[in-house]
Length: 464
Image (cartoon, rainbow, N blue to C red):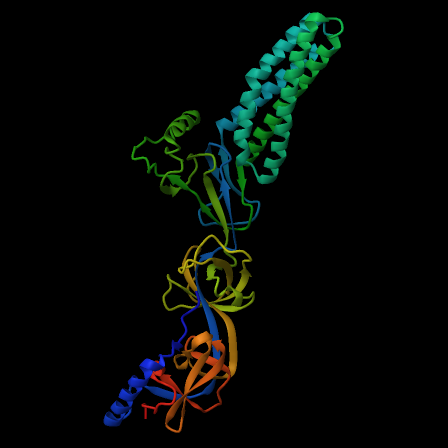
C-alpha cells in the first residue's frame, strides 16, 4: 500500500475564524507561536514510492515427489549441495510398482496365449473360448483399469494426457468386445454354421482388447518404474525432504522401517499415512532406507542464482508500477540493511490476496541486485519501496504544507504582507517528506510548513 502523504484537510471556515482570532491574541501576548513554521519553496529531488509487503523467493524451484509408495534406496546428493540439471538425486525402490509390472506382464502373456484359439476354431470350442475370454475380462480388466486410473495423477502432465487417452480407448474396446462376444454367442445357438465367422471375429476382438489393455498397464507401470530414479530438473541447490515425525494423530506408532514394505504400506493405509515416511509432522532430513508415501517430497531444487521479492501491491497503486522501476528492499531478518532491486514483473490479473482495506492486490516481482552485505534467504519477510515517480531539481515544498480542499484540489498557505493566503497548486510528485509542485508557486515564496490545518485564508500570520 502506498505510504501516507503529508498533506492535511483544510479546517472549515466556521471553526477556523474564531480559532484564528485566538491565535492572533496569543501571538501578540507571547511572541511567535511555536506551533507554526514557514519556509521558502525550493528546488529538490523528489521521489514518490509505493510500499508493498513481500517475501524472498528463488528464481525457480522444482519439487521431486515420489510417484508411488516406496523406500529411499539411495541418495546421490547431500542436503544443501549444488547440483546441475539431470544430476542423480535419489533412487527409490517400490514393491508396489514391481508388482504392477508383474501383473501387467502376466495379463499380456495370458492375452497373447488366446491368439492360438482364433484360426479356424470350431463353434463349440469357440463359445467355450469366448466364455474364457469374458471371464478373464471380468476378473482382470476392472482391477487393471482401476489401478491404472489411480496411478495417472502421479505422472507428468504430458504423459498423463497421453496415457489417459489410451486408457479411455482401452475401456471402450473392452466394452465393445464384451458386447460383441455376448451377441455372437447368443446368435450361435440358433445358427451355428452362419455365426462361426462372427464368433472368430468376436474372439479376435476380445483378445486384442485384452492385449491392448495389458500393454497399456505395462507401459504405465514401466514409466512409474523409471520415475523411481529421480534427477534434478534444474540446476541449483538441493534441499532434502523431511521424514515424518509421526505426529498429528496422537497415536505413537513403532518404527516401521524394519518391516517389509508391503506391511509398511498396509499400516500407512490404515493410519492415513501417519507412519514413518508419511505426511505427518516434520522430522529429520530423509536418508537411505526411509519409507516415503506417494506424492511425498523427496527433495526440492532451488535456483538461488537470482533471488526475487514477491510482493503484493494494492489496486490503488498498481497503475503507477512499471517494469524496470527501481526499489529499496528491507528484510526483517537484517534490521538497518537495505537491498537494491528492480521491478521484473507486474501481474495482469489480481491475486487471491486482499489488501488491508478489503480491495484486491496484484503480484509484483522484484529482482534483487547482487551486492555486499548479508545474504538473503528464501522465505524471508520483506518490505519493498518501489520508486514509481521522480522529479529532479524541481520546485518543492514540505509534504506538511499541503492542505486538501473539496474536489481533491490541493493548496498551500503562502505568506504575503504578514498575512496567509490560500493558493491552489498542482502536485507533480508526492514524495515521503516533500512534494514537487508543477504550477501555482514561485521559487522563494514562503509557505506554511507547520500548523497549516489551524489557519484560515486572509488571517494574520501568527508565526512571526
